[in-house]
Length: 164
Image 1 (cartoon, rainbow, N blue to C red):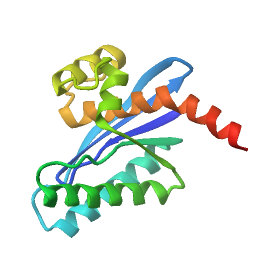
Image 2 (tube, rainbow, N blue to C red):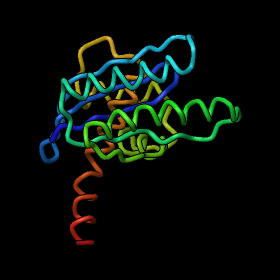
Image 3 (cartoon, one colour):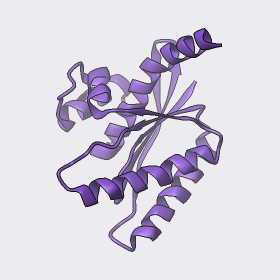
Image 4 (cartoon, rainbow, N blue to C red):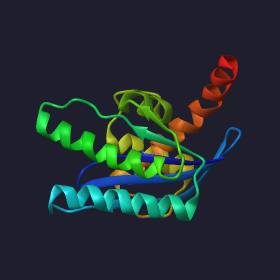
């Protein structure tokens, strides 16, 4: 199963794609979408278009996305929510359902500790996936979301199967 992990941001968004076969996971692709400091609506459009292109190229079957957390700055949180909305819309345009994961759950899945720092996440992603260098912080976070999603997807299938 090909899984897409997204670490949303209004200026930089991490993208990570892995293949999961049972308990084995393999790196496929990672990048950071840089939107700069231009007009906010143009940045949202750039996020949508670039993710749309990546999905068309790599054809993931499922998407995990880091959930928005409420920061001290409400304006920043609102912008992050809008950026996340543009990214979700790009996924929906391809018929993909997006599963949200809180940052602590992503870190727990990859590092084993929900309060791990970004360096610990990058280190574990290098060990687990052996991605080609360079590995930007945002890309490592997105790959971590994909790994978290890989761990939870089989359980989600079981749970949805019980409901039908």
